[in-house]
Length: 56
Image (cartoon, rainbow, N blue to C red):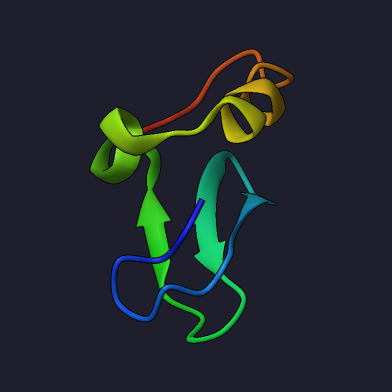
């Protein structure tokens, strides 16, 4: 996936009790629901590993 702000690569980051997508270039973090409609197959596969995703 690509960042909306800088087109950098988004990586799945697990934090205490939550999952985020973080840009490796600009370090901007996205909540899953912010980019849910744009998830690619690779990112969806990574997110399947987590039993629950908490939106805060």
